[in-house]
Length: 268
Image (cartoon, rainbow, N blue to C red):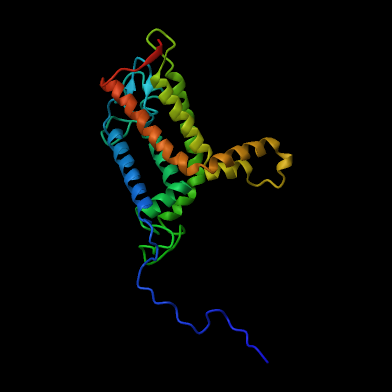
């Protein structure tokens, strides 16, 4: 008796399935939440950046990260520590030197790419759900080819995190000298989470541990790589947390400067 080897599925027609997807769960819910969350944050941040007010509490040196460093002629006294080289035209944000780099760092972040590809471009909206676009070219053509500059935006984000750290340190101030209040906790918490998000970046992980053949010959880099790897596993969570801390920090400083409530002071 002889047998003939056949290729699985050979000669069989593909199943005729009219439905776009056979998923019965609420696959559309996560991209919807992402869309609403990112859209709300972008709307709030855009409005705040172009309000040009309520960004600096002079008594305690609280400066919102949305306006740091303040570099236009509109900056109030004490808020501009790096000079004011830009005019006070309403379309120019006070932090015009840093905001583009922060936006670039976030837009090219590996997690955010997944988030807005699914939530805004529906490319694809979820696993096992058809792409809304007919063609797919990856990130090899304009404008998505610029996603590859994420590794360079990381360096700019590190410098900006240093500036935010300085702002948080400088805020330990009161009219009588050293001071400490709830605003300091808010600013410090935001800085800590920003550093955690920045260091959890995939590019940071590659910079720390990439191009090494033997970790045993580089023990310090290995330890740092382990730390960054642990943070990297929480990169998505940190991305959302920092959006929250940035908005909350800005709102807190705005509320203090607008006189909606007073800062809770522990010292000074």
